[in-house]
Image 1 (tube, one colour):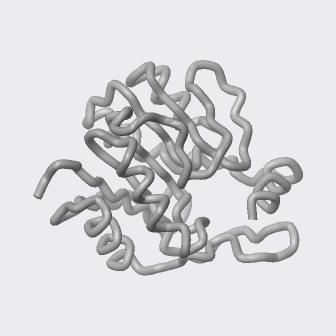
Image 2 (image 1 turned 45 degrees about the vertical axis):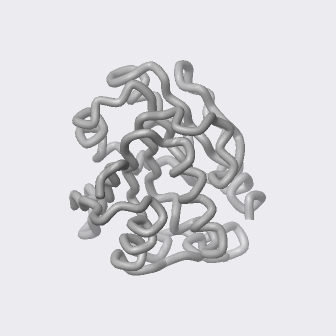
Length: 186
């Protein structure tokens, strides 16, 4: 699967959209001193956070190779984050989880839970992929309803509720659903 995405980044304009752009204000309100973006793509979201909100910013992606100066970039899988336990205030992940095979979802959430201190902000697409792989393969193998994701997040992060902020996706009728998890709340 990794090779599929590496080829997409190398051979197409895949990953040109900054899915976190609509969440700048959400992250600003959380007042992080450190942030990790899982599935950072080209790194535009991380660069914005680094330039405008906090200076300890990490981006993790298993296919893209960001070159923007400022943030620290990790090449790797979301279920193997190269950071210490409880080392970042906020973990974000935009339009990434639906790309992860279902059998890896729990261990990815568990790994994020391990490194985060305060908040998570997730945007998980509920729509079929608008693009396919170079061989026509579906890029959203884990397409589930909102309630499925919310239940899984509540169970793994051991919280009673999550906040969902809905924002329109520019130039489309679809919407971003930002799921905010506040750790330590029961």
